[in-house]
Length: 415
Image (tube, rainbow, N blue to C red):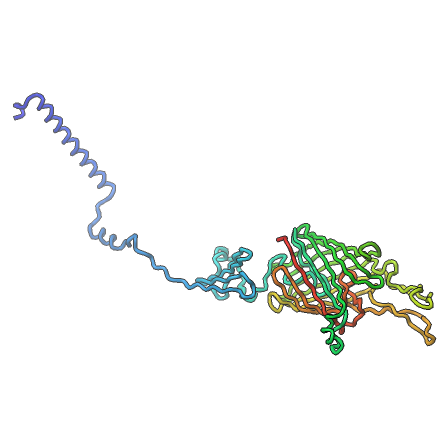
């Protein structure tokens, strides 16, 4: 039959036959290569593995976790979140998040990576008494003595002190004058400015006006060497100032002072503020003069009080709550002691000598802090607040006679 096909049909049949043979060859080669790469497995094994393999879409079990949220009533903006044995503290006002180790619980994730770094568990009560730098729970003064409270860079810090005249005791006399609040008040005003986070300058004016002490302006500068915070138990500031009478125009006194603080536990802060007062009785301005008496008493020229002095202020602040503290301070002195000079008379009322009557300052009170504002209700036996004078009772009241007073402070700007 092939012989009967025409020449054109021979060519067509030959091509068709060649294509068929080529296709079959390629198919055979492909099957052989696939068989070499993946050996044939018994049907039973394939089925078993197919049954053991979980489906990709099968959801994994996700146990539900309980989350506990607690708001700190004493510190606005602070929230505690607990979940799965972990606890974090969120301070929304400062935009801070801190992980807290839970007593008796698992180790925090950060410490689990480094077994040598152990975080001591802290209770909720301990956390309330922690504070950051420049947010010390004590004020710029305890009652009278200064503290090493840090002055942040660029901040303005205002301080007001109010001291009344009439003592609370005896109450039968002060009650009709509202425990002395109706008596004459001395209101001093001060301001400090932070040049850097350590260096600051200050100015204070006291309107007290009496013999040798009148309308005093004090200008000074301080340097904070150690800043007290939740990680540092100690604080240290040194301070130097000049005081001048009659609005800083005469009778100058020079002060060098150190201010130290130490924290005991979480609630107790102790203070020590030793100071040297140079020329505190300069120009003999507190000594008696012959013309102060009638008839004139020349013997007054023979009585001399010390020219210089030193004081050693001790204080304590005990936190009742994170924002409320009980205050106490006391200032022993040596050298010149501010007070009053009284003549000694003989039987004929003639002046035969003089004695200086003086009392160290002592104060106590209670302080309330709200953010950058602090208010203290104080009881003290003095009205003077400048560095060379706060250590003495200018009213010459004994420690058992206290007058009501107030300390107020406010910070503006800074960190």
